[in-house]
Length: 230
Image (cartoon, rainbow, N blue to C red):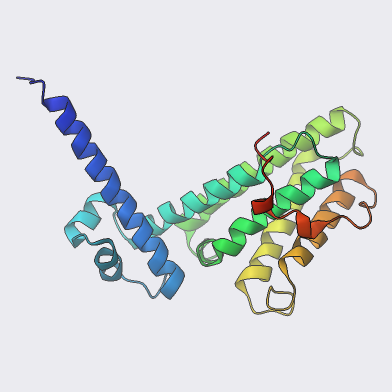
């Protein structure tokens, strides 16, 4: 028999479950960022989250599945912020702001994205998930390129191939810049250097012309922009 108390009780249980799930994700994020995916254990995560191993396995099959969920959340954020429109800005500034947004997530989430990228090269399951995110980025870029071609605003090109080229350029550059100790990393160059070189390269590749001189890259930081949701 259904009573008037059943629905509120179910809602309370749902909220508790959602909070527990979120607590495990937060704990995993902190632990992976600190110790790295390979070093962190399920015991580390459940201790951080304040839950039992049984509770962990109620929500996740294993550490890999948990990591995928953590990485998915980061990649979804990156997809959202990098795809914002800036209708009041010129074409070059829009490219700059998209790169600022993309690299800002990379800078904050280097451990998660860097390990997600690296694991995708050796783990078939993670590769499949990572590739879905990559294709989603490329499909959006290709769609925007196609509209620019149809409007005759950029030179004729294969939008899918150009999108794949641009995506690979930004993706691998970001990995080397933030996740390695190479000479071209953020240990040698600053954030604005990365924004500038990526934006100039993108603009040349798409529009076939030189970018504006003396663009104020240092004033294009994502946190300083309040008009990015247009």
